[in-house]
Length: 160
Image 1 (spheres, one colour):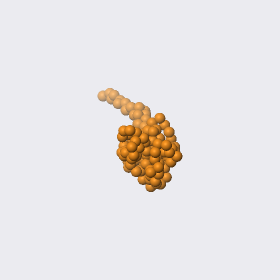
Image 2 (spheres, helix red, strand yellow; image 1 turned 90 degrees about the horizontal axis):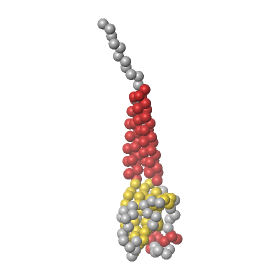
Image 3 (tube, one colour; image 1 turned 45 degrees about the horizontal axis):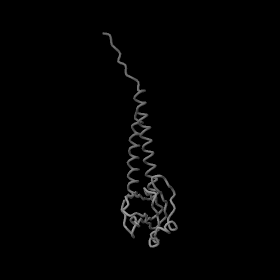
Image 4 (cartoon, one colour; image 1 turned 180 degrees about the horizontal axis):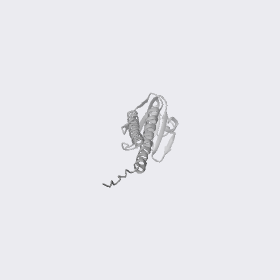
C-alpha cells in the first residue's frame, strides 16, 4: 500500500510539472488583423528555435513574414510553408527560427484559434503528463490490490 501511495503522489507531481512546462511554453490566440480587403493575418509569430504551430482550420496558409507583401489569393500557395500534419481539425507546421504570419481569406473576421510553442518544452511537458498519469493509475491499482490482499486480523475469543 505504501508503494501505491508513493506512485500516486509521484504521478500527481509529474502531471503538475508537465502541465506547468506545457502551459508556460504554449501561446494560444484568436487575434486576426484585416491586412487587405478579404486577407486576414494572425499576429506576427516570432520563433527563436524550432517551434510547432497548430491552426484549428484547414483554410489557412503559413508564410514567412518577409513575404507578406506578396500575399494574394492567386500566388499564396507558392510562398506558403508546408504543413507536417493535415487532419480534419486543422494543420500543424514545424518551423525554424524566423517570423511568420498565418493567412486566411474571408469576408468577415475569422474565428480561428491557433497555438504555437517551443517543440522541446511541449514534448517534455507532454511526456511528463503522460508518465504522471500512468504512474498514478499504477499506484491506484497497487493500492487497491494491497487493500484487498491485506490479511484480515482475526480476534480470537478468549475463554475465561
